[in-house]
Length: 369
Image 1 (cartoon, rainbow, N blue to C red):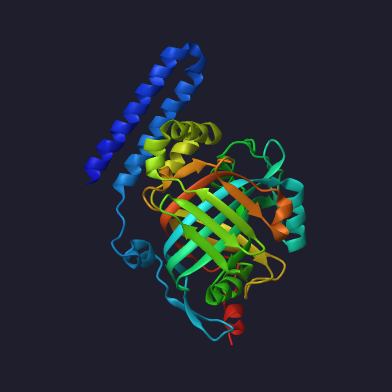
Image 2: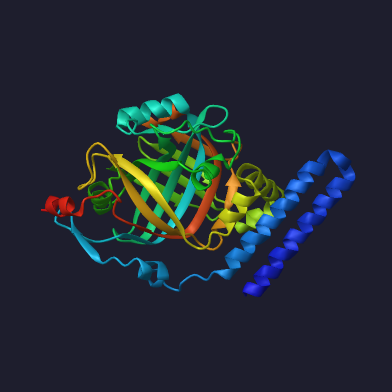
């Protein structure tokens, strides 16, 4: 089956390369630069395909070696008297990640009002915009059971560090990806989260320092791969999810352009490194100050996490299309002026989220009832 898939994808890519060659003959040197970038995109796409086909998914999510290497071996008691095992395990989650840009002034004002501005400030694109990344999560199985969650996060750097301006424009779909994966000193600050599980809220606030709030979340996914999300007072959105069919059959030229854009934004070395970093990605997330037990009130919690995307995740991206997609932030987030740019999709993300680096375990134990 893997061999048939490999041959099919190879055939599709060869057809698109032939189509691009035909375009070059028709339009001459005018398309030379675009053609060269597109060929680079073919190379990256083939690399992604090879990487995807090399990794196999565990038959049952809980049997994945990720959870064997990071076992949930420590019990923690919450204020509700519930006992949970840590680190936090997300055995199977559908993740839709929408990245884009926001008003830099509004974002920094929001960070100041939330208490995060004492230590962190938003990083800026070359045209003076901030970077926002929104995670639309549907957990099918986790430490807290099944639930839905909306995570709003921003790209930040230390307030007392050097000024950090990203080397990309807000109009570049991959600017947010470049910020968080290939630039030193830039972190993802998890601002606020809305979800429909009280147990997950308690774990997030008491153990991880995540500023979580209860919310009724309506999530629909149609047969035509359209995702609809509604969170009262927070968000209304409808848009198409990326898919391999769309990438290689319905809109192959657009996929090649995006792949070329990735190389242009990240550079060939970093784009290749991102593609080849393997089936696991380790990141440290910044969460809120003054929430997690055992973390000093005047500092943000630092959460190490190891994520294991699906093998096809590297291929599952698409540019936001204002003609067919819609996104509206309401309430406190409306002032950000969020403009979506890129959609990424993972049908079966798995990850482990550890307790904060800077958490005092003895204080944490004393906080337990």
